Length: 209
Image (tube, rainbow, N blue to C red; front, side, top):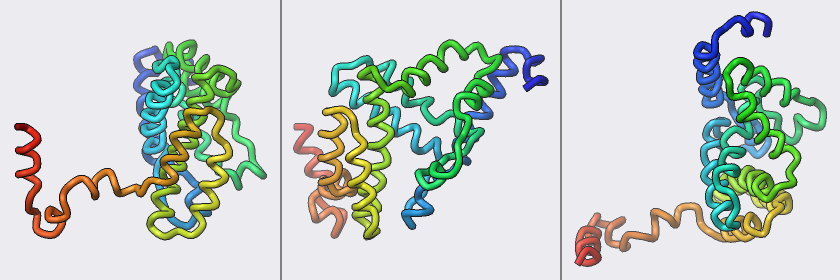
């Protein structure tokens, strides 16, 4: 880190943004053991942030704080990579150190790191919601893999459901576990649309009237 200290803030912000981009190339590794599914850390982090917004709204909690914790909760993995549950039995990652190195010289140290510490302590309602958002994103993926025939996804989902900490997270995840992942796009149009691409325009026009 010695050479980094000589770089000005704008250069360090450029460094930071390049590093954030590395999350798009960093795979989530648990799917290797599940046998199906894949995503990058960046893919995961986006929906976790959306989930944080939804859960904070449900709980009438501070949305900004919750989303902020979700958005950066895996930022350190650009340096440490993703440690799945099997990895964690044998290895440790220096997450705090990695995040401090990521933020050094950016001027964001005192803005991002305190939220990371709040998330790690998991005492505030916002931090608990953010932790649940992290798990529910995984539950959504597991439900999709289960719907498509992976026989192991159900037991993984059962374990993930037990890790939830808030009433809001439990309620949302329970509904997710019973909802077909394709319903949002498949059951909306009339059957004739999927058969002949017929009837959708008429239905929309009637709604507009």
